[in-house]
Amino acid sequence: MIANDAHYLGTGYGVYGKELLTRLHNSGKYEIAELACYATLDTPEIKKAPWTVYPNAPSSKEDPKIIEFFKKNNVNQFGLWRFDKAVLNFKPDIVFDIRDYWMYSYQEISPLRDYFRWVIMPTVDSSPQKEEWLYTFSNADMVVPYTDWAKQTLINQCGENINLFPKIANAGVDTIAFKPIKNKKNYQKQIFGKDVSITGLVMRNQKRKLFPDIIKAYQAYLSRLISENQIELYNKSFLYLHTSYPEQHGWDFPSILVNSGILDKIYFTYICKNCKAVYPAKFSQSICKCKECNQNSLAMPNANFPVPTEKLIEIYNLFDLYVQYAICEGFGMPQVEAASCGIPIASVEYSAMTEIVNNLKGYPIPVVRMFREMETNADRAYPDIDKTTDILYDFFVNKTEDQRNNMSKMTRKLCKQYYSWDDVYKVWDDAFQSIDLSKNANWSENFCRVSNYQNAKVPSNLSPTDFIDYICLNIINDPKLLKTAFIKGLKQQFTTGVFAVGGALKAHSYQSVTQVLQSYLNQKLNIINIYENRNLLEKEDFLNVN
Image 1 (tube, rainbow, N blue to C red):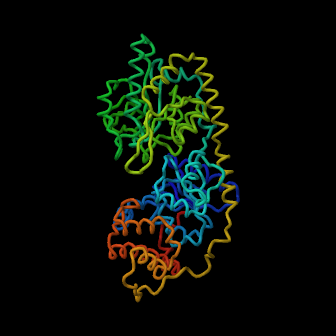
Image 2: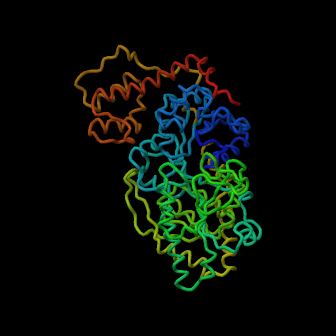
Image 3: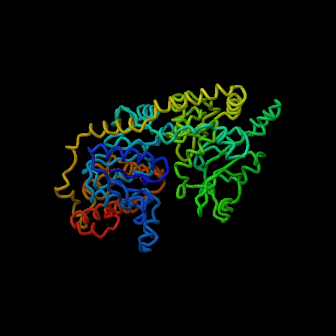
């Protein structure tokens, strides 16, 4: 069973999940279930899946109280509120997750952990990783590394405390679908109405994606073309940003573009919510008029309204050079999608980007300096803007057309060699087959109990650490909790007053610690109640989709 972005979504996690789940199902070795985040009961795609799908999001038709409950905790969108019920219903031997830490950390303290082996693939995008993340990684039954870079980072920080699978399972790409379009120049002229040279990127509008910096680098490149009298090339050169706007916590594109001085040199993707037309256009309002149907329904795509895959492939094929510009990446799937379309790539020399750009023999973009990010306490990278400008100039000015064509062919060949979904499946198959399931508790046996907590008396004068240990061992009756990031963070905060886990807990007194642990105990008691009264599961519509 996997908890993940729904398999039909065009997000990186959604694509990874679909490719892997399809192969696991087709192998005939596995019975598959998916806790599909962002899918609702009335999402038609989930009924077409050949495996069991549990939609995680409430539909607009559901009881307002259910919707209100869902919205109360941000982690519910990642599966928290339905995870244990889905596990109770499906009774998996293995639960696995391939997402970011904060999307699955709740699974570490599931009251059902004895009944399944927990396998995770953390998207390690920086070093060092946060201390509480390392606790969770070490408590997983198996950790499958995303990249060699991630594997080495985990070895350096965890040593023998982590059960790290020796093979990496980085993302693949469908090289049959993602392929070069015939006669690229004619295709570009058809779309833009003229001969063009396009530098492009595909990135979500997030803080860690360095849109202002790539725009600054491109502005410097254009200035260099003018200063060196490359006027013909200047006139046909454009930067293409396939991204989203507006986006909560995203970049303010109107301000950035006005300040850049190259507003007329940048294209974005727009999609019509009415007629579904997709085409590049200069920046306009959040909602503007579609040139195809003449309705005010044109906007940039986003995770909820993405560009269809076939259109995304067409967008990649508009690019002559692909640039990945971010402070870090756990992988960065658009890089290999672009490479599969025969687009040479340039990527920052840090984290997974280093590995990918080296495998594809692209342009490594040097890091001008590292900085420590406050939110994650991890080192992040700022790429060298001047060197980026040099790379653009080398590719478009110094390289001949034949050399660029040869780079295109080499890039696709290397992509097919390194990034195969079939190879990804083989790693996961080997990982799952290596797991000793005899350690799982038997679903037919009685569920783990808690002590007579209502009459429990906690000894007085216990230290903060002993107080928490006593409750976990003698009231909640769950010694495994003591090794989790949840309890380690609670102890640290209670003892020192320092936030240790996400800043969400407020455990500065015995009373507040008791409230936190009571909340966990209530969760466990609720699961015990459902386990012993299976008719309660029958009332859950999301458990009976297909």
